[in-house]
Image (cartoon, rainbow, N blue to C red; front, side, top):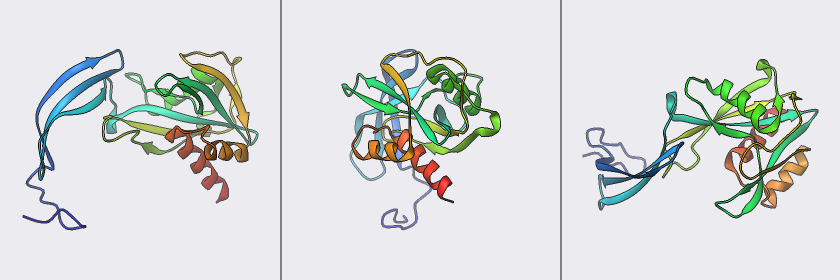
Length: 200
């Protein structure tokens, strides 16, 4: 058997993990929660490995989008109270890909629903994807930049916890990352991707 540690070859004939069973333990409109009974190739069985799986998944396991709006050199962020962590943070508009939607259509819809903004199709740039928590959540989030955004309606909080939409210069946004006001990984990565693109 080939060694799969330290950069050696992986034995493709034996799976890294064998799933003996899957038990649904809870769910809502968006997610199902499962306990998988798994056996690693080299290790002890794990009888209750938690997996959070969105009910709808698109090609490549994409289930959500995050989109960073930009206009006149400023970045639009939404202040959101997140119940799970008990505090308000700043984030980009984001949400789930609905059945039958492309990633880009979902990004445009979330931009309008959450921020009252729109961008021309050529100004919506796909900049990759992230796995929010690959150890537990069976999902990927597609990332977008929306350049030269325009308001299509006044901002109005549209979801639980949403408080305000404000525009910030890049230096202010980087300071917010440094001081912990922005902790969402998709927001941080989008800000960094935009900074890299601007510097080129």
